[in-house]
Image 1: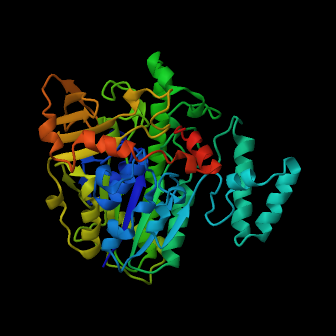
Image 2: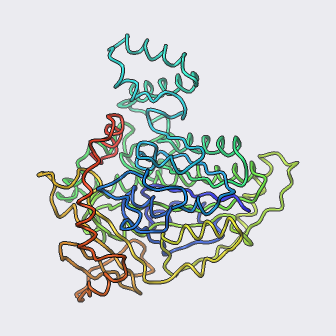
Image 3: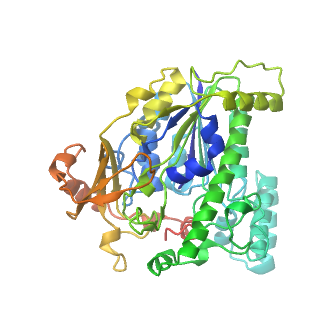
Length: 492
């Protein structure tokens, strides 16, 4: 049995990954150049990656964002009973707030208010503490010293203070958006656990709001040190055609991906050096992001109910695949020596590029095959490929200020060089795709046979739409700390 690792570079689309994550690309044994996500925002996409099913079946979507209805047996982790399941995530949707942690033996949340997992969550402490000013700070100090993890708790408080003091300073943000801590925490989990293991890590650094961070390549963007994309209403910037502002964000997005590329490569080296068994790593994204281009239909972000190529065409590369890059380990080597050797081996390998379409619905079988040695990439590709989204990912259905056009139930079907997108509202459009232009689509004047396409799914789209909307709204069950974090990310 091999160790398997699933790394999610949250919100990273394929075209930007191919251009700016060159280190991971060059070190991959297998590249799925035509990978498509099964949905276009975090909660349903993570559920699909783990279960190999669409939202209509696994039940995680806008109207029910809670993972607690899924058991480990419903996921690839259940197919690997001998593997220790560990996970760490900076994505609040794929975290303990929504029951995602219940799938693992060991799980850690990372956020700006809890950069050191296991310590006090500073935001939650602040909401529960009735004191103000110095009194609240003293109360936190006492609570941290009395906590089971006092050093981690104190460090969480110090980082929050540092963030607040440097928020508008004309200096680069001193700490990244979790990547370095996630890598360190995941390595700790692996070293503290047993082998074989199945590890999941979600890196959120490419998700907005974006800002310059110490460590980002200044040659890639011109954003001032004190600038943050969180101060901009992006739908208005797109509407007025502020191309200079849009390009600033796109370049900063590229810099974040370049930074993740470096961090993740170093993390993979550390993993390979720290483990006794062979470890296969799959790097992908839960979804991409709309960046206001014509191919994105002029849309921005990923909160609206859309299935553009900018959202669905995501990277998927495999490092240290079985029979491709097995390491002849020498356990007497130091970690640095083993890491350097693995890096040299990776750079000598030529990747197998699979340009047939691959769906996240096949990730479950892919990961299990790698763990058991049954490598079968070619058997998992081909059309038709399906994707599905139920509603907006922010405010819920039924609110008067939400445009029904942004809160649709929509489906996409890929066949050959065409993609059809249709909604429960009756709207349907055919798009032409070009394998030489990742994340690109253009509408064509062709009829869409919705009845035929609908038969590829478990149930008709109108039945699915009626069923999910009847589930109600679980938004009222969120605690305030979760609401605040989602608001910072632009969801609420």
